[in-house]
Image (cartoon, rainbow, N blue to C red):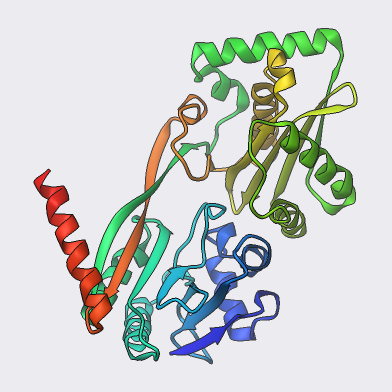
Length: 349
């Protein structure tokens, strides 16, 4: 196994760059640029990124972790900003199991020893999920799966906006039609779409204006969204919409489109314009644009089971986490016994 501590994700060795490129065919959130933005702009400065790979010259798998301020626990390099997370590997990798076994065995030997490893945001339908569990258990770790988050989504292959709208609940359709008609009749609303770097400065300023005026609290990492918008523009994934009433930004939405999948990532609106339902109108206009121009096979709402999401997208899947404990250390054994007891209590209840 090879460890890269505090890696520069923008200047990875060629072999690692190729590995991340293969993984990014499945997910925007496997791009080195994503991890660069997350590590530099969306993570506590006390967290040191650590990149574990099975082989220095031709790696099959990378596990992206973080160590917080000298802690004896490793965690996945993921936060509430991370819609998806998982091992970095190419689809159809024949060495997946042996590579993960190598990493699991090496982590047991690493000094100082780890009490536990916690991986969040994993897709249980991903081949790496069951392989990851089996690899760590084979090498002597105890593995405890848990529910992480829900994701609402829609299969949109071949779907046009007219059919999408017709399939929404009547209350949502009627709200959109009435409010859009009102805005059109008054001639106050202007919607601009931003997908590249040419207009980003003004777009980011408008986004920040809406966010500060919205019901949402201040971001714990205020530079993160700006950095993500610029990164998404650089990769061609940016779908940013701004709705203005007069000259005032009233609603803003950040969507990410990557390899046929679109994620509705961040939404905000100024509550002074609630009578116009500016959030609903902007979401519908962006949905229409994305379905027509990008023709995604899926649109999803990222992470979270907020009640409004099921009005827009009708299917749901879950992401899981793994709490992995080291039974060979005294503190890790205590964690193992605690988790075993908690599991039995849950089953009993």
